[in-house]
Length: 302
Image (cartoon, rainbow, N blue to C red; front, top):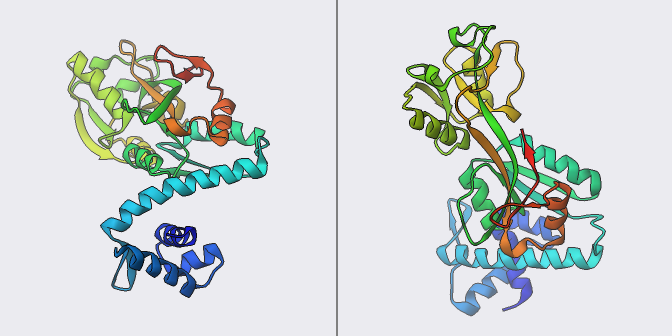
């Protein structure tokens, strides 16, 4: 097995086609094809299958891809360290996030310190963002909720109150009111985020504890679309106070008798926590204070 064969396999698996991989490696397509066929022939294994003119990884190919992703991630980190040492004058930081607010805040702080580092952010639901991290497609993740996992290093970055909002003419949100009681939501029409949303998870837990049963009239997997539905008068929504966008059509009220919070956590793989790039990001984000579990967090409580 040669390094060039693994590099060719990895490039094609990542790009999804021989043409795109050849362009990325600046080699010819026949060269890549020859390298991959030699690897398959030597180990008597099929790594790619072609269906309707498209390449697909076989089961063996998927397993090998998982291994070489770690290998090339380590190689990229070693190359970065050796060429740039501790200066971080160049490089590529890849982040996954469930929402743009806190991720942008952190990245602005990091960019101010290391303007030469290229940054890319992918936004998705919690499951997708976490899987990208575990598969080495990203270096860091910003997640609202993280289950205990020995593979992960987790640090709380912020804690924001969840508030209710509705169209300005909603009977429960008249100008003289400054707070909303959670019982006010009993039987009220509500627009909610998709299952898996931490905002929904935390709100539903508080509603159950109070014995409050609202009328869920719409489920939407987008903050922007949910806000528009609420502004149209469909029902009441809830949102993290940090992510609420002021809008003349809407009125926002905190809860008087319920403490409901949304969190932002910085997450990376335990075995990559000491990576220079990742450590620099965590430091730039201001993560320093140990919590009761030994994790570090910055006291950003809103």
